[in-house]
Length: 433
Image (cartoon, rainbow, N blue to C red; front, side):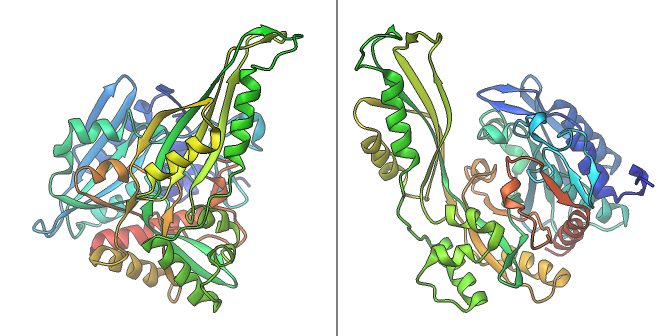
């Protein structure tokens, strides 16, 4: 007998509802918009007796916030935030409809199940559980759901912190996505707590040449010139370089495995399915993500361009850009499309202690390791207000599930029991910190 929605835990039903809003963000200002999902979130918050505020600086690009009063208002407020947009999903590539919120094999499937409508649902239902019980969080919570994160927050968090800084009055710390989830390290389960993010640098390579007939003898071909630059950059093996955060990651993995810490790549590989995520944090990465050239089969175009997603270690942005220009050569232009800061915050202090303790109460004995996220979150925007951001979307996952590989991938899915676990851990943290 198929499971009906009413039989599902509330956190699963909310995540399912959110997945069914197609909030695809194509980038560059092209988006289906987040308004309908934001209105759903606002209605949910209103039902809890909260007063949501909306900010839509661009039509359909809606952000929503509500403040939850804590028991001890002398303590700094905590921002708990998510984003409502998702990257595109090509339905033919999926084994399920990416926007149906299908339940299959004990998992919730769909675009956003991993990034990050799962956490959005955990935020909403954990706060709901606290308030419905007649309790309060320990301190004020500023619940915020942003638009446009998947485009670097240009039309979302960047505008919110500029135009609505009062939303975050009294806050010093924040928690959001891509941390607090479990990975298999050898035969042990450990949790990765995100305490930093690489800097973001989206660039466009432009090669120019001379237009001509496709049959001509021609040495000034923009497509050839661009292809050589893209291949050179995409195949570059960037050197390993440890920061304070990644050194702590390596040391933590060494402690769990009993291996020597002298080979960080080998230690990162001990994390199984998460090894690619961790290895990307140890060095700059330059991945080609788009190509555009030409307008007819028998015409050699005079311009060709490529998009490159560059993620660099905090503090190395200028050096990396100089290296990129050297690698592609003087004949190829390097245009900066979007850039944002890198972050590292301490793996210490009361909030970190509270997150570690909350995980420990629900999964005793599992070690917690700090790590540097290879991607980025809306914590970058909040940093401009002096708010220190962490990644804490707690999930206890099966050892054989390639969770990190599903970020922006095909057949995103999250175990139902992991969502319930995450709601309980998050509620525990918010009640006690």
